Length: 363
Ligand SMILES: CSC[C@@H](O)[C@@H](O)C(=O)COP(=O)(O)O
Image (tube, rainbow, N blue to C red; front, side, top):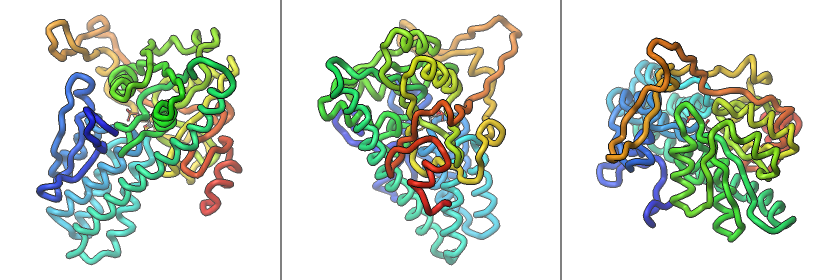
């Protein structure tokens, strides 16, 4: 996507040295656009853990490059297995991370040690290119949905989204936001309700920044406003991304997604989930009991970061001294609350049969 008319991906290899890996530091957005140069495994692991990079597809892609960086230092079998395990363990919920590392190992284990570094960069590059192609296809599939609503009546199509599933959460395009960008680019009148997405505010800081940069109409709302807006007919559909989908269509996504799905069901608002197939975990069928939910530091709940009147980015404490906080970072929306899944191969019901019809090779 473009920033100030320059096209960027969310991760890229330095054109000059040919090996260092570049990302945007997402903890600095929207206040400043800082590019980080990653040169080693530990720096990549740190970037994923601290959410300098985040979003399910993007952490998979960056971890893949992290393995390539690690192999530059030691490409032996033992080091490769150790570094792969370390990178895969940086965040637990998004299955794209484990998927990307597994895919890298599948190729690298049969690659002679002398050729491993080149093969790793090549495979990581393929993962990135495929992510872009898949997300663009998701955009086209979701565009049809938005177009159908737009054709039914005049006025903007009001879409609610949670967290950030835009281009900065993937290599490019995004998942939930890809159809919105395409609708906007084709002249469809879209307006997005952006959940702030406490505690880390990915909606308020990242989704609002992305949509604003692209010229898409949007309004940031407190997380608890969605149900009210739905009751008053101000939401035509919900589109969210996801970090892991079971083979039966249960959906893990940023904490609070489940409550939006409940409100959507109560108000007959379609609730769609956009995902590349790399986000499907074909090994599990019960999301609530089987998807590992990341517990993050309570400080993300007790404190908040923002820009003060002098333009300084600063953190402030929200709670009384000593109040403990819990911080489950994701929740699971049961398939029964999901209207459907938007994948690169088409839309389907959130069921085992629906997914198998689109991806028969996994049956
Ligand atoms: C296209 S990314 C989809 C999800 O990864 C996104 O909705 C989300 O929950 C991201 O969580 P985060 O904790 O910011 O990595």
